[in-house]
Image (cartoon, rainbow, N blue to C red; front, side, top):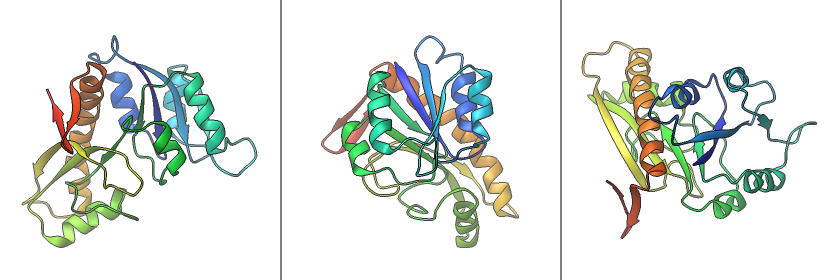
Length: 200
């Protein structure tokens, strides 16, 4: 299965995918795409000889229409948003309907939506006095964090003293969960039945 990974930051979830022994025979990362020109995650991609592309309005960046053509040319089967912070345009979501997944660092539908990413999420979780947090992998639709949930995993945060402690616990779950879901999709073990996502 050919995948493209979209990133905005340091790329720890991209690294988790590339480091997964179970995925080595199942998937090939054909491209890493960012909304930034000099994204830290590009260094990880380059160390694996994976082509990188930036999208946006600046010189040297692809427009989304050009990106769609590129992804189709690369025969991309699945787009993985691994810390990508921008809302995808409808035309891209339509072109890859139910072939785009995202990982979110909380238990959706709580603590999702515009502006709810990275430290913002963990701060909101901490200030709510929630006793559990976790990570969610979901399909991407036309708005932030509202697509059908594929898999969630929770972690006890009842004893944490800061949002940073929550982040440390959740990122470990993310690094397990995202490769797991990619594997299940590559094996054809994820389906949608009556608006419910079934994982075999």
